[in-house]
Image (tube, rainbow, N blue to C red; front, side, top):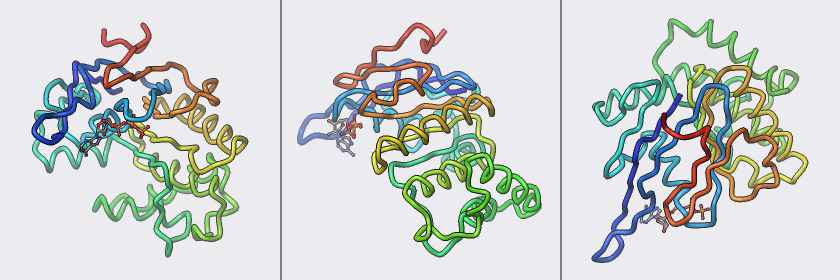
Length: 230
Ligand SMILES: Nc1ncnc2c1ncn2[C@@H]1O[C@H](COP(=O)(O)OP(=O)(O)OP(=O)(O)O)[C@@H](O)[C@H]1O
């Protein structure tokens, strides 16, 4: 579960500051996909970066499973991100030299948890199967289609069984049909694994795969009842 509580984020803009996120409060609950939409420049990516604890907001709180990210040291925040947050970017950002399965395994190495390597291997196989890539586990990114690469990126983001999944425009590099399949996959994985998912999308052609929809305009968010902070 992730809660953003009265979050404001500004950036320097000449002598002044621009408010990218303006007092936004929202909750994404386990198993639910919350879409964040709005025009270009409305603050969607900024909000996601704050949710990912990659940028510290000027004010407000980010709670990941009730842990207040603002109260953590940089090292603790890194550990929190690694253990509890999965991130999928617009481009799949896979490592060219590694096979699909290795992309997942390398996460275990990066986390320095060698003792759990066997378990991660088992989970990698299970996840590749869940995203429909069991037969492609040994392929490198260049041998995979755009949609398949995005599936690997989704599986990789879930390999540590995060409670929060953050997804930025996952369909931007895909045609509509493949985009729809990716959105449905994210929806089903979030529901089945109880992941609280925030998904940024600028177009609503895949609205059906979103459980809730937050609309941003000029940094402010219109939040439906179900996604409000209790
Ligand atoms: N690093 C930065 N430095 C200064 N201003 C920034 C920075 N990042 C974003 N902004 C500004 O903050 C506002 C929100 O930008 P943001 O990228 O979050 O919007 P967005 O809704 O994700 O847009 P898009 O759909 O085009 O990706 C914009 O006015 C943008 O120019």
